Length: 229
View 1: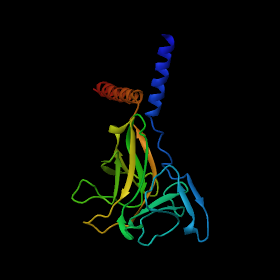
View 2: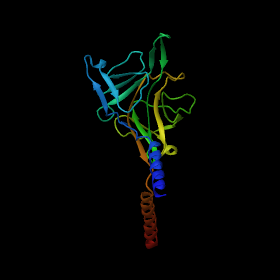
View 3: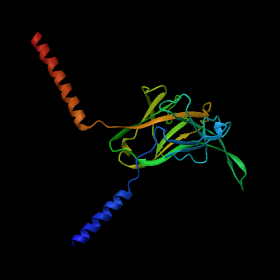
View 4: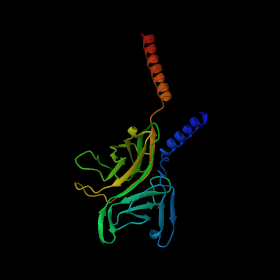
């Protein structure tokens, strides 16, 4: 009986572990493997942790018409590297033998931290609201659900945007940043992306401390007014 219970417990532990993905990786794009060559833009690049689809993955390149994800180390938004996503065309080999217009994206699957409330990231371009008449050039999704974004005070030299991800806290989800061409506006052919973070909900203990301090402040103000009276 004891062995049966122990075996069942081991199975449950293994199943619970298998259901959990790893934490999101390389959210600051600092873990990049580059096999340098001459000229530098022909260097082979591996963006650790991220899927970039059929896009050209390059280093310090300025692709002309190609869908690409490019790692730049000149004037990064933070750290050593910033990536740029470029919309354009990718070659579809035989039997099609043609070029298709495609969207640049980076994506990965991971665990949204428990207690996470906001997803923050930095970019170099102003973004419009995808829920307005048009849709933004850069769209962020979790499990294919569009995350409405809003601008917050900048953390560095770029522009910082945030989105509410509290509904996904503690879940395994597919995170995707995708650059579209808007038919209603002049297309932005590239956008920078860096410094992705999940910000937690304040701990209950922290909220209690702030509530206590607020109550003490109100009480002190009342006591002073009563003393003056």
